[in-house]
Length: 207
Ligand code: TMP
Image 1 (tube, rainbow, N blue to C red):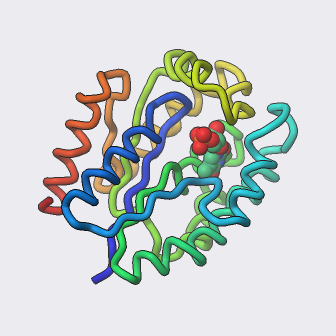
Image 2: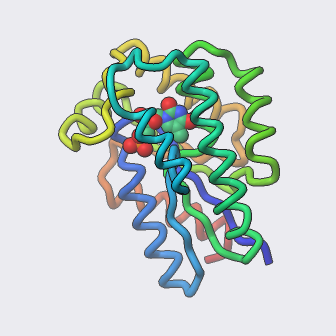
C-alpha cells in the first residue's frame, strides 16, 4: 500500500522541525517505516541548492530565481526520494513543501499564485501531501524565536512587512485547502501543539 505524505508549513520560528521529529517518533512507535526530510533539501542536489538559497543577503536572488531553484530542488526530491518512498509504503514527513513556495515566492515574493501554482503541479505530480500542518505564529513572535536559533537566516532578514504578508498568505492558502491543511496555533505550548497534531493524525489515519 502507498505510504502517507505529511508536510509541515509556516513562517519562521513556528517549531515545525521539532514537531516533525516528534511525529516521526510517534509513527515509528506504531511500527511504521518513516522517512524524515526537508525542503529545500532532502537530496544532494537539493542540499546544494539550499546552500545557495538560505545564506547571504536577502536580495541575493530575485523571487523568480528563488522560485526556479526551490522548484528544481523539489523536482529532484520528489523523483529521487519522496515518490519511491511512498510507492514502497513508507510514510514521509517533510519539513516544508510546495505551500512554502506558494507563500514565500507566490504571495510574499509577489509572483502570484497562478504561475507558481501551475509550476508546483508540474513539479509534484501525484506527491501532494495527504495532510499538511500549518504552524501559525504571529510574524513578530516567530522571528524573535527564529533569531535565538541561528542558522539559515536569509529569509528572516526580509523585513517585517514581508513576514506579515507571508503569514496572511499561509492562512489564505489554508483557507483554500480546508481538507488538506490543518492550522495549528504554534504560540501554544509545545505539548498543546503536539496534542492537536496527534489528535488529527489519529482521526485521519486511525492510529
Ligand atoms: P528552514 O527550512 O530552516 O525554515 O529554511 C528554509 C528557508 O527557505 C525558509 O526561510 C523558507 C524558505 N523557503 C522558501 O522561500 N520557499 C520554499 O519553497 C521553501 C521550501 C523554503
